[in-house]
Length: 357
Image (cartoon, rainbow, N blue to C red; front, side, top):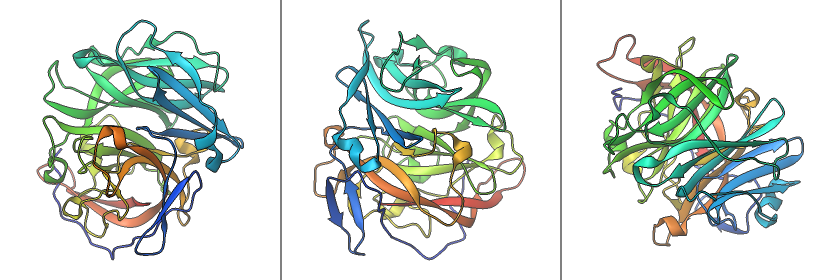
């Protein structure tokens, strides 16, 4: 998919989130707060079930779950280990918690090197009772990380970051249909490749990863994702928007933002979107939705909770220095994404997102 950088510009807007969970706040030049939590980790995944907020993270060679009655209590909540890699398969990365049919499913990456694959565990309760990990039967059985599951128009889908072949050339975003929360069906389809100049600042390989699904106020599907290497402060968040009536499995029905929507380097930002003031390299993120269900995505007009990982400005950028941050997001209307040399229309206008520290 080739995306041009043409974009109907809007006036820049820079505000900050007010969601809790902060143990440290940094006042920006605009007087707003960026909220750094006490959770020193990457790849946040948080959802709300009733009045309970539930998060998962990689910890101690496995997966830990926190529960709290309010968002600001999560950072101080006890971490309950729900999974340990007793088989010694390798790193446990980027767990994501979902609810389907009243049951909890945690998807995560496990393995080393070219053996990284997606796995799932499930339980009737959020913080206990999980069984052994089962490897997902993703099409082509290639290297796969950062998987997320969602239901759109009554069909389950799974989106992940993976390789086209068996070597580490680039990380693309792939999608497959699912017949159940644990079983994929049919072929995989690519929906994004890191081919734009602004997502090729830091590579070897070039990267699209950390996909997160959400629905906009018009009911159109979005998959936000992280671009550029996570080992650099060029890491940023961009957006894929499915055209109205489009097929999630058809690459040309997806339109890509014309730059980063949330990042710390102005040169890579989409026109009208400003870089962060307080953090470097905001990336892998989670929309804090009711039941984690994209059909509970927020309407236009209000800010809603967001969590992402980043490194505070003034601190050397490294994986070890990443923390979970709270922020907010809202929908921003009438935004044109453009692309060139493709079948069909080269432009698509609809909702985009504004992210705030």
